[in-house]
View (tube, rainbow, N blue to C red):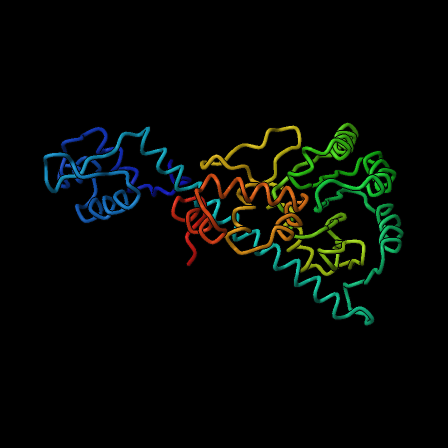
Length: 331
């Protein structure tokens, strides 16, 4: 029942028995749950590691179960820390995969290769996209990094979006959290939603990407200049990986109309991402690009985080963040 929180069934059974029989020793617990004493001792070791049992006051050698309200908070906090670490690993993997695909495309600009089509310049990208969207029948998925969208980009995309949604194509778009304070981009997202599209946001995105019917993917070859060029990918293995990348990102994203919640440390997703990038030694300009904000805003976010941590340098901020559990310990 509590396996989702990291507690196996044997340990949970022993924990429940300890709550019902607070004075029971190992032998009594073994009899109560119908297990061997060795199994009960192993379960007590697990519960001790999870901080769900503590030494009983005034009774050396005996353990007592912590109350469920405290115990469940401990388990959920531990689970949340693990999820945060897993999210960080996923984000690093996404960025590495997208970068590898982009670098590979740049290495082969003039040669043909099965499943790869090179597109050079914004005009060629838009012309090819206009043709491809007419062939989409079921689903259109997109990552839109870079923060607030330009008026030109939004105007250029409207006819395509309207045509897709008018034909009943399911459309899902992931923007950066930074667009939430940009009225034109929010109005564009609201327009999409009124036509049936779905919009969510995340603190950071690995690259600009469009997936069409899960059989074609268009990815920018440069994260610094998304208008410079793109590659159109049709290889099944690559598409499977990119679709999985989109779905894991979509699951962690928040609908644009929802308030972005704070984590257990009182940080927004944007602040938590900025803190991780800060600890990794990224410049204000690099952090700004990842978050889709101005360098000035990135400096303000970094300064606020350092003040909250009582740090005088970025290195000290990273160290204090790890000490206080705001960042996972590096291994």
